[in-house]
Length: 345
Image 1 (cartoon, rainbow, N blue to C red):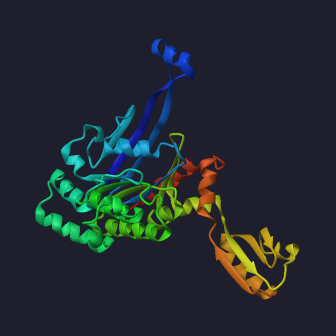
Image 2 (image 1 turned 60 degrees about the vertical axis):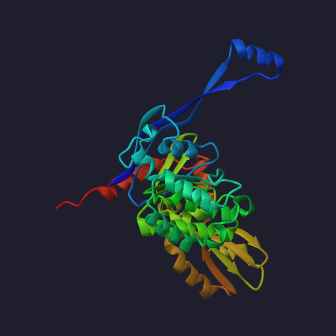
Image 3 (image 1 turned 30 degrees about the vertical axis):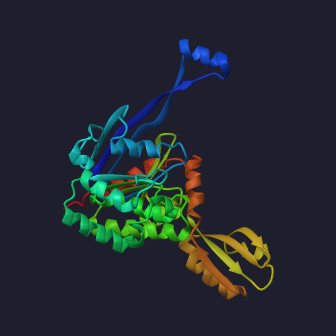
């Protein structure tokens, strides 16, 4: 069953526009000018229990605004939103105890105190029994290796250490729904991988529903089978991540290493030659013909090395952001309805 339902959600802001200088300041006292910013416009989607969904979009697309509406921090201009059967902006205690919002650029840890102090405050806020608190803290310690950090001042922690403690503080009440807004921003590659592993394990153990926003495509590809792409407040795509890749890039990238510079005309028999750099060539080969093409190439050309790769996910998402692919949302909805239609008995 759907745990998160968003039906024709819109969120608009009136933004004051002030002319520069003293005269502009004086005019703003008597004749203020406003413009309407449509941060989110007619967005609809639903997410089932236990799903991990990537929520993608360029800066200013409306991702964080949507998460803030789902968290009850913002009141929607129009539309209906339901999370765990609650209306978020009513901010009922029963709802507030069942979700968490983690923002990579915000912190809840108290700067001059050790993380353990914040954990104890959160335990009191969420009314977590002592025995449960100790069990949850031990589980989080096992997953995140928090031991050496708990009694160290937050301001003396590295960014990666602080992010681990931020996640632990947000999960001490064992929420059913996680809104993760750029949780790995600014972290090194190793720490990003640790955070991804932790989120995946938390989802596996507790069946938590996760919405993840990130500009690091590795986060999304590692955790999410489904993505929702949003831009300028509108949903551009909602569906399977792999299906999107195959729709926009119906080819695989074939990298060939020879012992001499290749003849482009020769390689063109095996696929679209997109780059040649000395003895190395890059081809685009149709997915369905990848294995057969590799076999022909090895039989007809002396090859030192050959390797297949998927197209860069960043390039695919960039095409969606740029609006170069039409009909994505309609196609995703048709595919979803065909999968959900029950078989005739």
